Length: 508
Image (tube, rainbow, N blue to C red; front, side, top):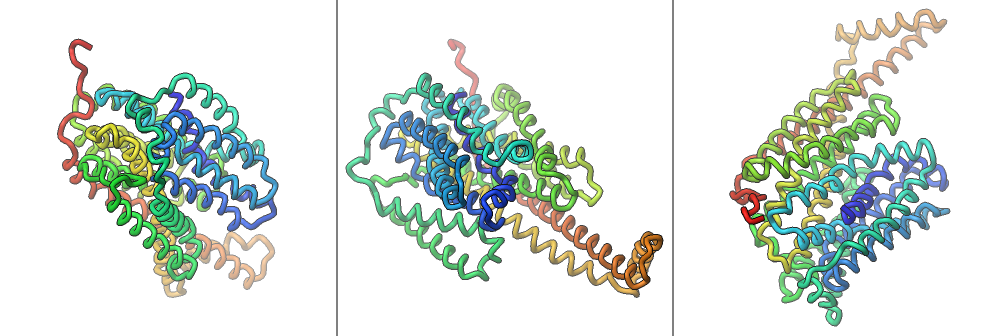
């Protein structure tokens, strides 16, 4: 519980700031585009440290590294809340992302070291609250805090939680004997080249994913340059790390079939989950007129769905059914949920949107714990740190790629639908004539001239057209997400065939 509290706080910070960006821009007298660097800087630093967090844990000891991460994350949060300019906030967000990035994989390593394989499903169930519920709750909590207090409290709220977590972790967490024996390994031989390639590659990749839509992707020289940097850095890192006998992160853990499939599945799940978590509030605010708080409330019940499902999955399903059957069912239900969400119309209600999100999280709940349990089931304990780091990296990277892809596809499909709908704005189209006449009849009693009524009617029709094109774009994105989920279902049967959480022996 105590290590999950710290991780929950860090994951929450990846989304809690999103709805506060306009307020930050106004308070610090910068443009909205400039304020997004407070989000980008966090993600860049987070992406750099994730793959090397296992090495840092071996270097310092897992408990020491976890404590350092939570202490400095708390200090960075305080400094973010006290920032007086955008450069200050960006620097402190870099610090927050760098130290926060060590919390997720080290929490996973601590759980792997603490719990035997038969009991890991329960531990991963608690972890699922942090990984799935935190990004869902972030926009709601961030919107409420920003609307009722100040954007600064989005960061300052971390301080008391961080202080409590620090003392709790100091009291209850201990490194296992093999982790203590490995602490300090690598002090004399730090892989500067490997670390530099990883840092450069992930920094460039995160900037491409985060800024690509705003910069019109590879038509921009800025994105082209960082795209080349990402390819050179990451390919160079893979070649370099595979060639070294004692790499900074051991990529050979992916030779384990179950772990490799698990990281692929968790990436796809994260892409679908985080992508839809961005689209639904965006739809509610931009097309349906919801406030930041109410758009976030559409997502919040999904967190309670996760809490409801966790004991059922860990205590019942994983003990009665093979994990691969549960994963296949989860992706199948997720696909159905995405097609259900693809039935949205401009008249969709709050309750309908909430039920669509609940259907999505129900399918997702069946994925997180079984995938994690099987992925780590046969990983050697001395490789737990590297495996946890690569697993967390895959999940976060999948989420970033998912958000970038759905945002780009939404823009493209909305433009396509708008181009088709515009063709119907012709005096030869009976539907257009009737709609225009209805608008003009509604304006007849406002003292406008015929030309003014005609102009106002055309403006209203065009706004309606743009809105309908956008809704159709959302429909396309949700449906293609459903297709992806259905395509993964057969792959689930390549996972380990045994039950992920076998019953304890009679003596226990």
